[in-house]
Image 1 (cartoon, rainbow, N blue to C red):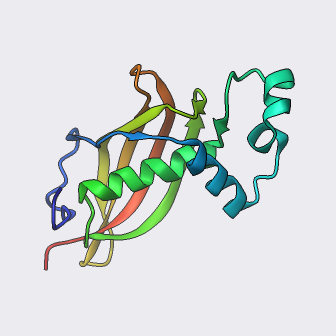
Image 2: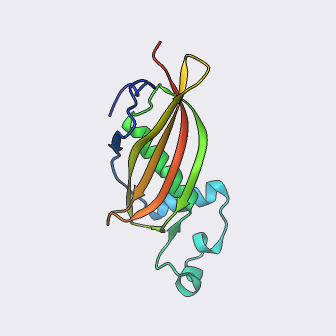
Image 3: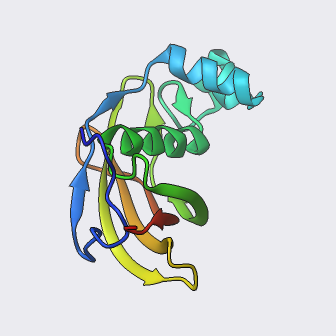
Length: 150
């Protein structure tokens, strides 16, 4: 883990980074669903899941998959102390994440541009969230404001 994140200048377009993996537990899904109010039978009612769902187990909401992927990226230290703001992005949920799946993230620096303010720049990242079978479960293009070197 890096103890200081990359500054804008240290980001190289085309560079890629890998996170560690994280196994998603039933407790994780239940905690997220209850905390965020995702009170859909798909996430809360295992009888419904068994009889009505296309999934063969407890599924994590796509928002949870994204949140966990962001946490995994934070744990790398890539933007520790240099990330100034999450500016938005585009997400595509490609496949479900089920209880017991282990996810990890491949991060690519896709683009970067300077701003009018000398202390910051905008970096665009491509995130690919993969499960333990190396299947893509979520894709994202994210823009962040990153601190520039003083």
